Length: 72
Image 1 (spheres, rainbow, N blue to C red):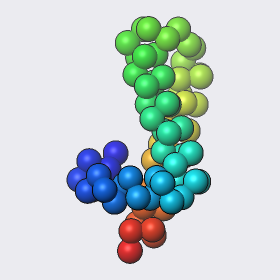
Image 2: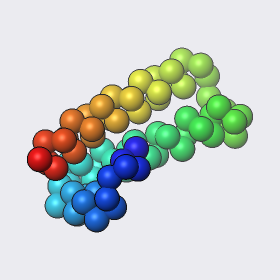
Image 3: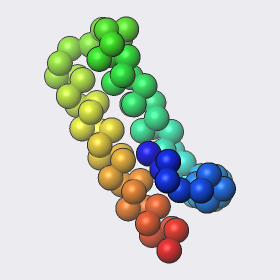
Image 4: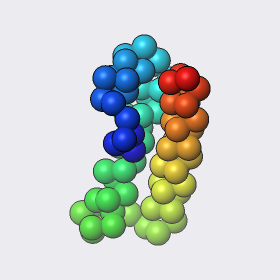
């Protein structure tokens, strides 16, 4: 998600900001679950998968906004 950013900056924000850290790891967890569901490893219904994708996108949007504010 922050591939173009220096890892040291991301690490500093993760260490210093609890809200950012929790949201970042929640996004990673959702990303893995969505991938597993799409691969058929995690059996869930379409409605649950859609909700997980929405939550993941909302987390990404929030993280991006937080990163921009914290970084500048």
